[in-house]
Image 1 (cartoon, rainbow, N blue to C red):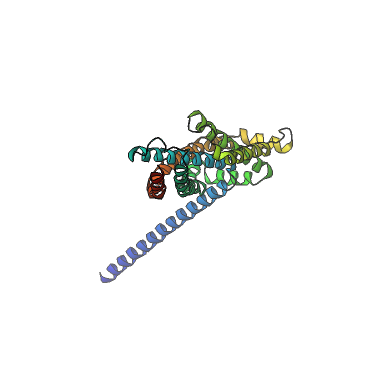
Image 2 (image 1 turned 90 degrees about the vertical axis):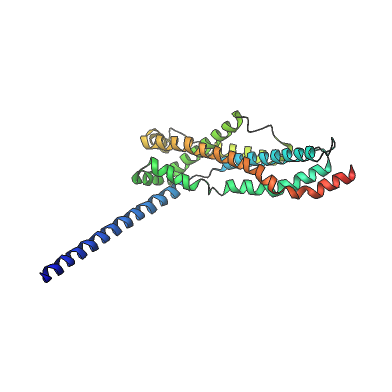
Length: 266
């Protein structure tokens, strides 16, 4: 009886050990697959430059900072009854404006350019849309010469969609004089990217690009980027536009000396 109890106990411990090992193995494999998928997603992300999109975003966010600061300074004028001379033609206003912009603008623009806000969601998007094997196919394709050319086409398509969204929603305003250099940089980057993405479709490489573009995987990938990524970029630009207003309020004390100077003069 005692031996039987010992045998049952040994079997139970063996079963528990096997179960624990199997569970550990499943968790390990799951973790390995997740890391592998994340690595493929990151590698796929790295084939895009988003140069034109970043140039558009930079101009827009600098514009939004300028408007946020101007709105705040007008409110200060009303609240403190600074009178009709407190305008953007006044040197004290311009100094206050510059002090706020130099504090707010870098945070807003740099937050966009880190792309930390995009990478986690990008990983979720591509893992949801594509199987591991498909991601490997995409990575392999975009490492070829024609694949890199195709990536530039997608880059440019996203930039165009972002620009169209900002323009037709009325968010991109008339060019501001002090952002002339940024506007020129945006236009140069956009046109350079437009030129670089062109290729001859009758060449063998061009035919290969068309074949990929018309494949199910190619169309799914293009649609995913143009729709999902453009939408996420627009959301982030809206978020950072609001952040410029909050940061302006946070740095409100930076204009105190300029308001005091204005009151002494007028």
